Structures are given as C-alpha cells and as structure tokens.
Image (tube, rainbow, N blue to C red):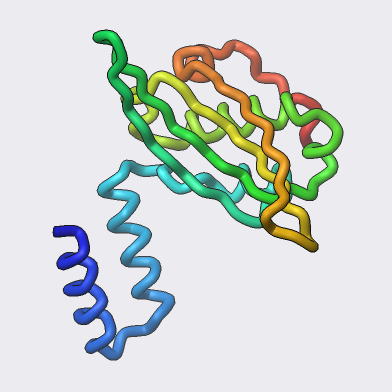
Length: 150
C-alpha cells in the first residue's frame, strides 16, 4: 500500500510544473501535521553541535505486558566546540529542546540521543555515543541552566 501511494505521489509531482521549493515546503508541512508539530528537530538543535545530518526514529515495544515508547534522534558528524567539550550536557540540551518543541512528545516515554561520528576516509568506520532521557524528566525539569552553551 505504501509503495502504491509513493508511486502515485511521485507521478503526481513529476507531472506538475510546480516550484520545487514550494513543493518541499508543502511536503514538510504535511509531514509535520501527520507526525506532529516539531517532529523535525529545530535548527537550534542542529546548530548546538554543528551537526551535518539528523535522523529520527520512533518506536514502541511491548515486552512482558509493558509498553515502552521511544523517540531516537541520531545526530551525525558534530563539529562544534560543545560537542567535544561536554557531550553529556549537549545530549541533555538537545533532548530538552526536542521535548520542548515536539507537540506529541507526551506519547513517548524516552528520548534517546545518539551521536554518530563517521571516519571521513572510510564511512564504514564510525563511533557512537548514546544517551537516554525520560520524557517526564525533560518536561518537568526545573533546571533552566544553559549547560555552558551560549
């Protein structure tokens, strides 16, 4: 079904003489409405670590009668000073900003921040760091510290 919808949309978009930028804006607007406002991380999150790319994964799992749901942000190839100075604080700040901006964050239990650094000479070599935060802690956080970021 998804493949048929994708092919239909590709045919529809390829047959119209639309402005590419407006078309992309419309697609992002539709995706935001479907997934929730703030689904795509803000430019502020990307700027914090000067990340090249971000990937978003949403998951829900059921194990022994327990349901766990998680939002995972994969922030790729950070170059900023804060990335190398205090990775843990940067992860917390990214998670807080995402929780603040995503309208459907209360549907999830955890926010997982994954920093990925790839080797520029061999993209198959990579280093990963993971940090998991409870959504309720991010929302109810009374810490309004800037964690050293300006």
